[in-house]
Amino acid sequence: MAVKTSKPKHTKSSGSVRKEKRECPLALMLTPSEYELVQHFVKKQKITNKSEYFRRLILTEVFSKLNIHYPTIFEEDELTGGL
Image (cartoon, rainbow, N blue to C red):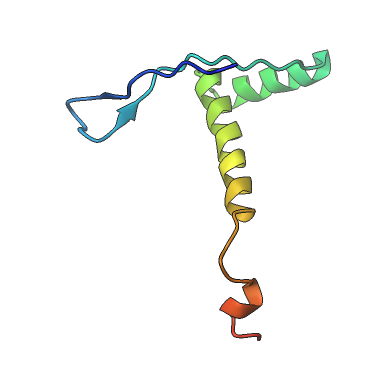
């Protein structure tokens, strides 16, 4: 299934910031105890926008994993001089 993308919009105030419309939903299922734990955390941390918080949390983890596993031209021992 192809994902419909929209043309990036530029804001006048920042000039170079790309704003893309979020139109691809993502859902997940939790057990009742997991749900209560998440609700407790959100309330305790005073998170007002759960969607933004979990989007940042997920994407931070994804980018971190991609960065760790990103292929390099040289092996690690070649970069350190075989030390």
